[in-house]
Amino acid sequence: MTFRLQFHTSAEGPGWLLKVRSSGELVLLSPLSEGVAQLLAFYEGGEQENFVYLGEWSDSPIWLQEDDVIDGENLSLRSLASTFTPDEFALCSRALQLIHWRQMHRFCGRCGSATTLSKVELCCSCADCGASFFPRISPCVIGLVSRGDELLLAAHQRHKQGRYSLLAGFIEAGETAEEAFSREVYEEVGLHIDHIRYVSSQPWPFPSQLMLGFFAHYQSGEITPDPSEILDAAWFHPTRLPDIPSNVSIAGKLIRAFLAERGFSIPS
Image (cartoon, rainbow, N blue to C red):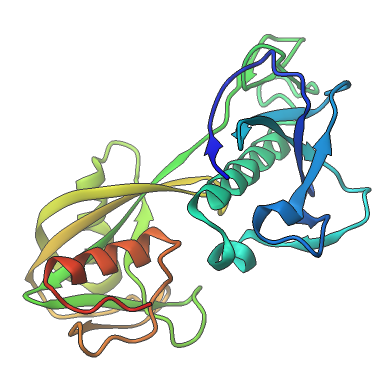
């Protein structure tokens, strides 16, 4: 099963519906199914009011439908992420980002009137003043800082107990991504870095980030965690790693890419 992001405004069905609560929770429709299939309902075609077209799933069109009425257990994408394929995660990630966008723009930010979903493009439109609101993506930086073979990992206030991950933060107005990462590292642990190198990116639907991933080298300073965000931070050798994020997240992917570059074993 594959997911392909498309913009076919004329798609009519048959196809699939991915049902999501207005709160951003996925709806379990088929308890006996596995993967994203447990969240999908067959759609024969017809009325599409308030449907948001997501793309193609297994060569068939698929829509997001906001539904707070239908029976079904609520599930979070975080709880399912480790069981999903990359395509399944991408599909649900896009759905959650679009439901968040729709929730944030039910009313016009210029005049306060109710908005409607455009029939020709992915935007919420205001009939009274003509304003259009497209899905907003917030760019963030995340990166792995190394000192020789050692890597810098931190336990964050928001992470589960015992898990260590990478440093990350939002890009401020007027910053480059590299400047933002350098600033975040200094603010969170008091270190200066250099040789910042872009590696990869990942959409992250909590709620609507685009994570830009980097590698960087330690330059100077002593680790001094900011207690408002960081519980602990330390240098770790690849042979003595703590609990780290799974390969679903870009943090887990960057850590494993760093280990692979240096020929160390990759955690499962």
